[in-house]
Structure formats: C-alpha cells, structure tokens
Length: 377
Image (cartoon, rainbow, N blue to C red; front, side, top):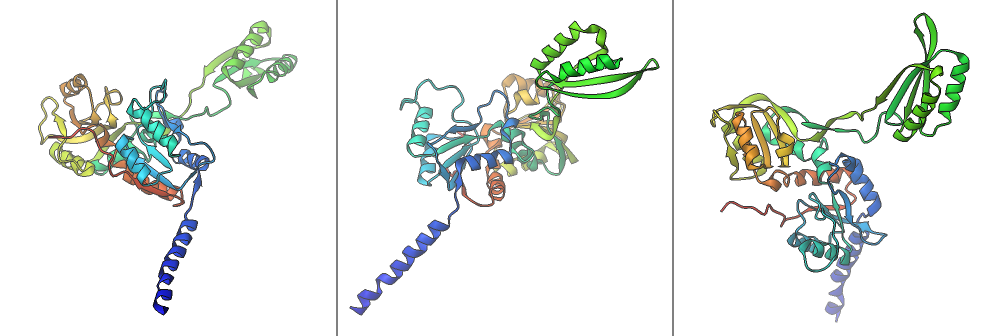
C-alpha cells in the first residue's frame, strides 16, 4: 500500500512543472507583433505592385506564441505549421497575390485560407520589403561573395517628404501692404506651411515667401497668385522629391575588396547557398579563370533589376532567356540558382534577428518542409 501511495508523486510533480512552463511562456498580441515587425523592416519599402502585410487575420483578439517562418506557403508547409502549433505564419512570398473571387476547396491557395481561418492562424508576408531592407534578403545574399562594399541598385525613397506637402512655391513681395495681404491669404489655405526671409533684389529690400503645400493646396495658391499678379514677382514652383534611403532598395551592386576568378566565386556561392549545382552562362570572351571584381545581384527574379547594370557577374535566381543572351553579349557572366534558392537561406538569419528584435517574447521556428519546387535530376 505504501508503494502504491508513493508512485503518483512523480506524476504530480511533472504535471506541476508542465503548468509552470506553460504559464511562463510569453505571448504577443497580434497587433503589437505586427507593429514590431514593421519596425524591423517597414512595409513602405515594398514595391507598389506587391501584396505585403497581414493577408489572413483570425477574429480578434489574437495572441501569438509561435511564429512560423517559410519562404513559400504550400499545403505541405501549412500542415507542418499546424502540427507545430503556429499562431502566425510569416511567408516571405505572399500566398495571396491576385484577388480571390471565392473561397472554396477547389484550389490550393483557397484551401490555405480556409485552413488558416479554421485553425486561427494568421498569415503575414513581407516579400519585397525584406528585399529592400538594409538587413534583408539581398544583403544576406551578398554575404556569400566575400569581403565587399555594396549599395542598392535601385535605392528606395523615404515614405514621407522631408517637409509638409510635395510642392514648393517661392516668390518675392516688395511692399509691406502687399505682404500683409499675401500672408493673410496663403495662411488661410489648408495644408500650406509658410516661411519668409529678407532678400535684396536690384538694391530693393524685398521679402521672399516660401510655401510648402500639397497638390490640392497648390491649385488654390496658384489661383490666388494668378488673380493678384501685381503683388508678387520672381515666382518658382518646385515639385519636391522624397529623399533616397541609404542602404535600402532593390538589388545590390557589390565591389569586392579583392578580385577573384569566376571559378572561385562559383564555389563561394555554392557554399553560401548550400547547393551542389548552379547554372552558368559565360559572358562572351570569358572563362572560368576570368576575374570578377563587381557583382550585381538580386534575390529571386532579377531581370528587371539587373538590366543595364555594368558588372562582371550577375547573380540571381532566374532570368529570361533573352536577358541572359543580352548580358552574355556584353561580356557579363550570369549565375542562376533557381528562384527561392537565393532567398530561403535568409530565414535562418531572420529567425535570429527577429528573436533579438522581439526580445525572445515568442517562439520562432523555421519550416523543415519548405523547399524550391525545382530539383536537378
């Protein structure tokens, strides 16, 4: 009897430990997590044609304990995510890209949405926002080249203008009476910010007015000025540009610290991407011993980004046949590694970076079934 009484004790202890473990797990509210993900890499970096952000949202409130990372969300990967109790799937490629007219069991992408909603799993995609980000996919791809300096091939623009409005109107006013009338009028227009400073024109003291305004406000400013031409002179209307962002943008142009042979570069790329084979198009007049100093790269599909860029080597996942011919005719070598093979390895780095960024508040795991659909046979 004593023995049977003692036996349950370890079981009880294990149960208590399990409760303690469960209660000590950290969760994040979905909205807070989305905000943190945007702080890590702003969705404003994404291309205008892309479909990024939260694509599937369970009914609120929704908390996230496990974030599941994948390059492509296939049905096999979804099944793995459900088995691993994912609360949010971060799929680099957006599984929803073209508009859906219905949600049925007929197509695999519709089934993904149904499974996500039935199991209360969110789906988030950053795609080209991570391509452009300074710590993103293209920077990771460049790490495989060796020591180099790099810059974006197509720099991103800041999401906002440096000043209020996207137009600037400047003109001179000579007389105090005219100045009072002008200032009163422009300050009465919404979305206009006004600054003024003294200017001496033809030995005459004048006031230079500078207005920053929106497109809508510009029309009102121009209307006022056209009706009061006697009040001002020397007018300029400028269209303001959003400033370019340093280290942010599509593709990377990389200059190696030291030139290497094409054969050496091929070995480095294979090692970095963990590939046994790549596809190579030699530039006209080039050999495996030709030196490589400048590499233009773009993860995924690089034709549009790399087109016209001067380099010794193009590195990307895929390019059209005719774009390869064009590059080779200019003596540019081309290495193709298949689309997602130039992206997927980034997820390991992403897991570590997000763990630090999110202060390890949630579990972050990588898909083990996600893979490129093409294989060499």
